[in-house]
Image (cartoon, rainbow, N blue to C red):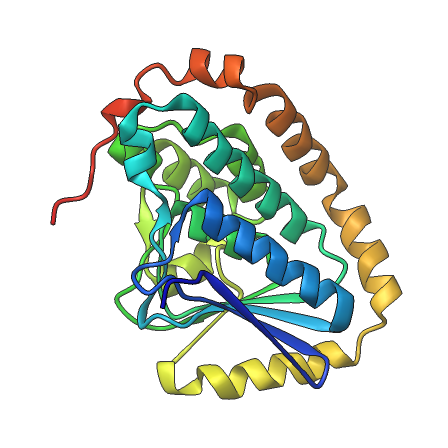
Length: 247
């Protein structure tokens, strides 16, 4: 298929499946489709589930070809769209469950970090902030998002050393909340949905806002400060030197 995000609302649950037909690269267009899916979820659901329809991959992250092109305007459009989407998830007025059943490279990890409950399948999958390993300094919005969820020692390792973690390590780090065998994911997801149906929605929104206000404000400030064209160009002069993955 050539789409990006499909939203299906059933029995109060909006299931948003990522599927670009390949590895769910987070282009500006893909990020826009996820945003539109969240609009539908917000308008007609009580709980949202974010997962991938692609086997073994949640998302390959931002489109590195855009970075390598040297077009600062296109790179900025993509990064800002990702930042705004991650911020929206962190403050979303519905409980959001993120399901990781494959690799989640940085922008994929950012989306999962914005979810309220993060469920992972045990397997040879990696997630984290590996930007420094490919020639990119993690943006401040992403660092602040990760700071709000990760344990400090693990945060330092992934941000400054580019370490990526398989599910059980990700659980210890604070990147995930639960890790189960692959064949238990759907049953566990239903258990989580059942539990979330029992919470008071207005109280959930208030609690989320109070708890996450420092992270939300820090992310908002970082986006407004760093993700303008002049600031982006000044802080990323070597962006086109990003190391592309080997085939």
